[in-house]
Image (tube, rainbow, N blue to C red):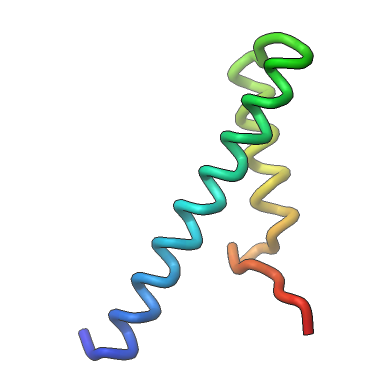
Length: 63
């Protein structure tokens, strides 16, 4: 793995971790206000969140 590929790998891993942390925060906030979510709804939220970020899983940036 070259330097560029390694950098891309690290960037993708950090993005996945941040997306997961952000979604966990959203779910925790919702549950504090509305009560626990069933697992099926948690999964649906994850799918919708991933879809909102795009099929490629890349963060959308302002141009």
